[in-house]
Amino acid sequence: MSKVKRAYRYRFYPTDEQKQILARTFGCVRYTYNWALQLSIDTYQQTGKGLSYKQLSARLTTLKQQAETLFLNEVSCVPCQQALRHLKRAYVNFFEGRAGYPTFKRRHGGQSAEYTRSAFSFQDGQLTLAKMDAPLAIHWSRPLPDGASPSTVTVSRDTADRYFVSILVEEDIACSAQTFPEEKRFEEPRETAAARRQDPCQNSRSTSGLSAQAFDETRS
Image 1 (cartoon, one colour):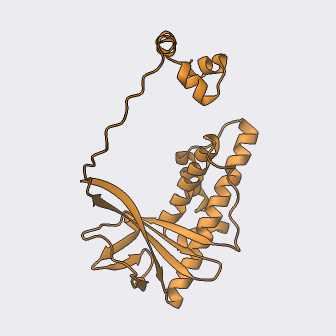
Image 2 (cartoon, one colour; image 1 turned 45 degrees about the vertical axis):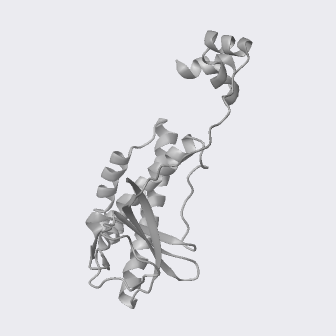
């Protein structure tokens, strides 16, 4: 048996009060993300350095104390903190070449907010988010795994004004042993094998496309 994390997505139908809470939450998440992105850009342009998650979190605490941004305290603090984590992840993806530079979130488009364990309760198949008195009316199109304990919950609203919840759980997956037919052994020509023993980095250079000089620099 091995454990894997898997997200289960369902549609839900919020009450009018829950819609108002979610609208404020989406707005605060979007505001926090855009504020942190602009602050990161300005800081880099002025100092040549970025901001860590810890530094952004400290700045966010100060921001919530200012008169013009007291509205950030009206919603759960967790989704706003998660917005900072998402921004840092976006920067990591950019610097590692997996995505473009982070962009500002728009008001007119899909919205989302992420809650961790401290910001929701899940009991007897009922999911209740922080700042809400009643559980979400979820259409359980398929059951969660038996005994599943959600670690993260992401609520979203699409451009058609439909609401969805994605529940991340950890479940056990049975690993079955598979028997594969015996493959014919491939043997390299003696000249190639000898050359590889003399230069163990040869294969890495050829597959990555790096020149010898560039490859040596990446190891230094």
